[in-house]
Image (cartoon, rainbow over all chains, first blue to last red):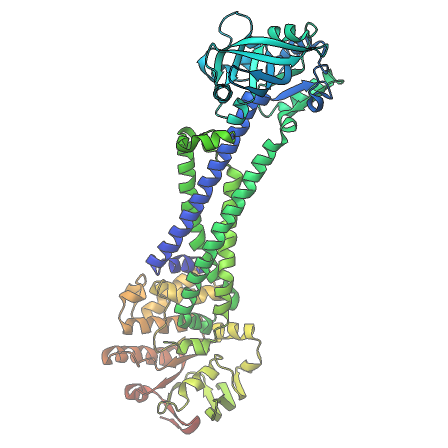
Length: 405
Length: 227
């Protein structure tokens, strides 16, 4: 019956309880929605990094990522790629020539990362082919085509069909030049990427630098599932023990830090919300106790022991917070679910987001672990909020309390 | 046979300047089945005396012995249990739990005692019928008159099967008709079921019904008369 009394006591002052329940619900709802929002933002950033930049697994010569040295190539890259494509769990694979060099237009020049790709294979590994804003992704067989990002196009002041010159060292360490025509301008909504990455055909770049036939600096692999990446990387490593095989998390550890940082930020945010609510709930519970001094005196007089009185106040505080918590979690989940399929349009501030590599159209992602943890935190808040008011209640002397008007 | 022995019971309140002897060396015994009124002017020490007797207020000196138990030698926790199982309380302002129905208010005490549900239900029904409120089992206190609430309080006081019932000015807030009904019920319970009642009062109608009148003044017993 103590539980029943506690629950009914919550509704003795409907207005006051509704205010504190609403405040809790609003805070929790905001916390869950914000968590889903930032989680979605981080997931999209990671997804974008995998789909546009990294793929799931990359293979290089052990020193290549540090040196970016043109001579650190994989001699039989195309053959290895062919074998990897046949492995179970592999969605696609492609070999790439990777050179850090310079691009010049009539107006200016810029440092870029040139990636020589086989378009038919690369279009299955990364999604640059579907991010083309103008022109096409190696739409015809003409030689020396280059695909550049919109940000670089702006920087170089070039348009579709403009000519650009790539300056680079060949295998004999001689300076060489290649005139290329811009046949595609892409936009991945990541300005940092779009400003420095350009794509040319493997064959064009290979002949320009005299790379041996079938060689490449990088093999990019797309796994059939996100979960299977580590396992697949292990298998690839077993087959190619002399090469460096890295998963996207190893290639870009900041992506994992991003997720962790977002999680920690969200927990801090939610804890701040709950701390603010804690004082509100303590205040409410203190009012409850001070209003009911006489009743508490009567309960002690008729034989309700301190443990039961403590439990009654504790339950009341928990009911107050958990009701707000459940309403808040429900509302937060519903709102977040809605935006799982309907993007939140932040394009008004799009430049700021794309400059940092984030998509200005955010789809929320609900983290059910976080929701369970939020419910537990709400429960803990309710318990903590009850402690001081319950202590005050237990300090009452029954005969004094009964004399209270 | 006496169920309560009071020896040299004293309660002194230390004011900033003066010491107030609210109860001053009282010696009394109460027998099973007595129907006693403690009377006296305001400030004579009636309520303090009942609080000391009921284990609510700690005496400065003296003893309260109920069935060979010196109640003020019990630990705080045991004293609460003692009150639960041995003493019924009726307060001037009824003091029912407002969120519970009449039936739940009565049943609540038995639940604190850990009695089985079936026994609680049967006894709640019987007690509310005994105080003439068998049909108000599911009414909340705010839907009942003062007289009805005080009858529920009597039923609640009886619920734990106490050795005696302490009632502090039980009729002070009641009209004459409700007072009459309540007194008849208490008298009936006293006579038929041999329940011991000790109540403080100013009310002449209550004194008329009482079979023993203890008069207090300045914390001392002025007279102790049995009718």
